[in-house]
Each structure stands twice: as C-alpha cells, then as structure tokens.
Image (cartoon, rainbow, N blue to C red; front, side, top):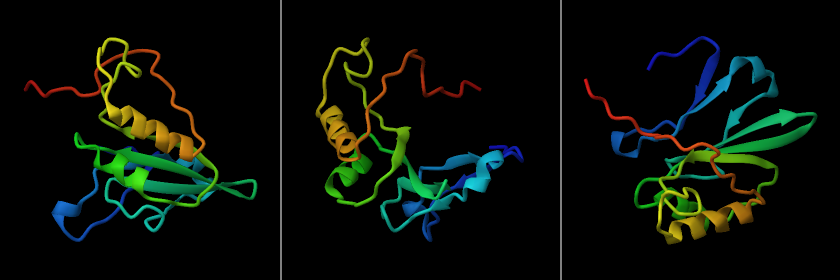
Amino acid sequence: MEMTPNWTTFSRTSLCASESSKVITYINIHIFFLCFSLWNDIFNYRDLSCISFFNQGLSYFLINIYSDSSQLALKYLKDTKVNINNILIMTGDLNIRNSFLDSNFPYHFTHKDILFDITNSFQLEISKPTEFFPTKYFNND
C-alpha cells in the first residue's frame, strides 16, 4: 500500500506473525499537533487499538477494531472492564450482518446485542449507514 506524506499510521507491533494486528489507524499530519498516542495497555488485544489525543487540556480516545467472523474482538471488549472516559468514536470492521444495520439483510444475530452492550458501556451510539455499498472488493486480475 502506498502512503502519502500527509498521513501517519498507528498499529500494534508484534514479535510473531500469528499475533500481528489487523488494525491500522491513519492520522492526518495536519492535526498531529493534538499529540496522538497509541495505548497498548488499555486494551491488550491484537485487533484493537486505542489512540488518545489532547485538546484544550482534555484527553480523548479513539478505538479502532477488527472483529473477525467469530467476533473475537467484540467478545474481548464485552468481557474486559476498563475505566476510560471521553471516547469519541469506536470504528472498524465489525463483520456484523444484521437487519438492524442493513435493511436488505433479513436476519438478526446476537452479535448486534454484544455491540449494543459495548457501545452503551462506553456511552456511545450506533450510527447506521446512510448508503449501502460493498466494503470488500475482490481482485479480479
């Protein structure tokens, strides 16, 4: 993947390939004055990243997730108790197909309930997509 000079990345490092993270967060250098920091001790899980930044003397957090088809990252979040405030956004690839999130999908799975529990515990709200388009494209070369 080619990077432009306007972005910097945050990702967990690992000593072995089986523990490598599937999460990377891009931060534009034009807002880097907010002092972004990666926190590996808040969530100690390879497919979660927790990034803080400072604005007007307060610390805020961004959480980025990759949850595989077994929902391991969501289950980890549900079972892990943390005491952090000021989470502004939690985003990522959650791999949840559900009638609540996609009106074209006719089924309801319990993974949505886990996601709701997590967002409620962080005092966040779920936003639904306003447009539906594929998030995975296959290479036909």
